[in-house]
Length: 176
Image 1 (cartoon, helix red, strand yellow):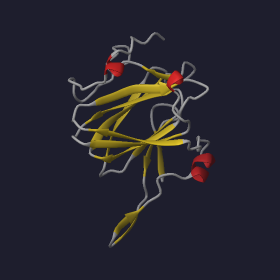
Image 2 (cartoon, rainbow, N blue to C red):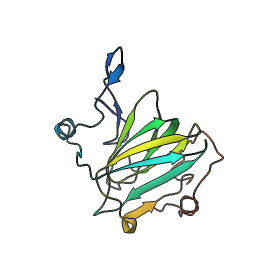
Image 3 (cartoon, rainbow, N blue to C red):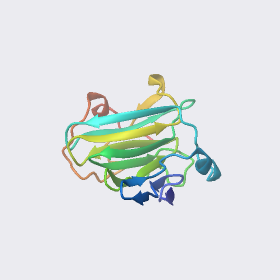
Image 4 (cartoon, rainbow, N blue to C red):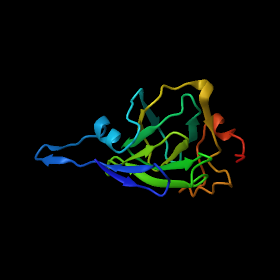
């Protein structure tokens, strides 16, 4: 696996290193030893799948608070998404900054998202699926979110018109 450091501290774009033959390819997508050697969280408590029917769907921006703050590795298994990480760690040099990358079923990329960062995505194609590998189990009492279009962050979404859940639509303005 290739770990590409991004402008947000502790956030990585992860590319596979496929072993290719006439059948296709085989590639690792998770390696606890490799992650530990880089000082990254390598515990895996839960895997989740998000299926999204329509292009333009936005999920996010979500995170969990301590003691169940999550580290995530996310990848798009079908379709394509504009995947966004937002740094909400007050002590971070990249606090309130964001980074986005296209994840899709062709490029096989993933984003490593450390705890304290919010995560969300907008579907670029109908029938997109996002697979999450998560360090903590979901705890509704620790679930939080910030508005996807909060002017404080200025996230540049590819589509201004979005399909949102009532929950995601109702997040308040962020107050640093």
